[in-house]
Length: 309
Ligand code: FAD
Image (cartoon, rainbow, N blue to C red; front, side, top):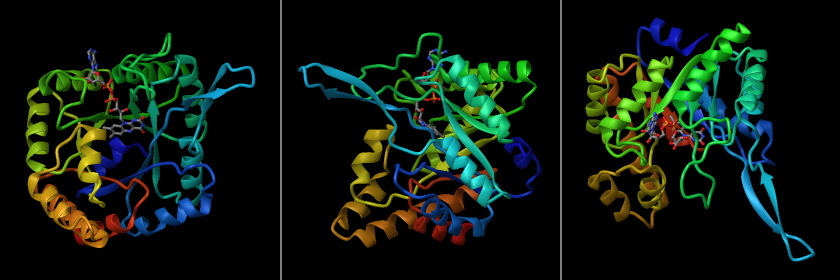
């Protein structure tokens, strides 16, 4: 079933989950058993992130360097197939990233997904490779996620396929955008091209999300906006998450975690407690669903789901 239909039919808010494909070497059973505890909360869909191949330069015997494309993780398509087979009641939502892809490569990917009976995708631009200064699309590829959304709609018409398309958004602004208003205008381009719903980047202050949601409505964005949450789980993340995702950690949360920096269990507990309070507040404030970023950890999310759903 399409996520848009699930959202339209569900009378009450539900949790959804995002997982990261495991590094090569981790078995299918290890992956599936890490998802199993989350199934008790009946998430209607699970997103599977997509990771660009990395470029590695290796020294050769003659002193030159050779360029290699390296994939560190199992592909999102393989992970989706494993989840479909074990948990057929759950829709899988593979992330599609335009970065590093030509339109022909994307067509092949879409054929595979349609063949697998997958009806949902999250369309993203993706990021630079490590060492690149700014995002450069493949020749004939995608400059922005809006172009990818339009291309998926073109593929559907040509091939008789049909996808529900989600897109990403940033309550604290995407790091490349000059201001939030322009970023929201660009989000609207994705919706105008045919995106059915929006999932936000993680945030730790619900006031930021509510202000963003209001601005989206003022800008003419009327598709569902699903908030994304991640429980902070280590003291290191107080620095790492703002650096990696261009977001703020509220002072009150950072101070509590930093005060317990030497106590791993206490940091984990503080992060889960904060996230559960955020989730409960979002549910009171009319969100259609709450999307959880697991980043390979599910204990804290299970605890939050038990408390809130
Ligand atoms: P876009 O919507 O294209 O926006 C990128 C930038 O371009 C923004 O600053 C925007 O304001 C600007 N822009 C857009 N259109 C225009 C225009 N027409 N003219 C000028 N400027 C414009 N990354 C991965 O690699 N794999 C994943 O699985 C993944 N999952 C994600 C899931 C979610 C929910 C989110 C929010 C992000 C995810 N990302 C993932 C990260 C994402 O790929 C990066 O944040 C990337 O830098 C931007 O992707 P986007 O789809 O938001 O891009």
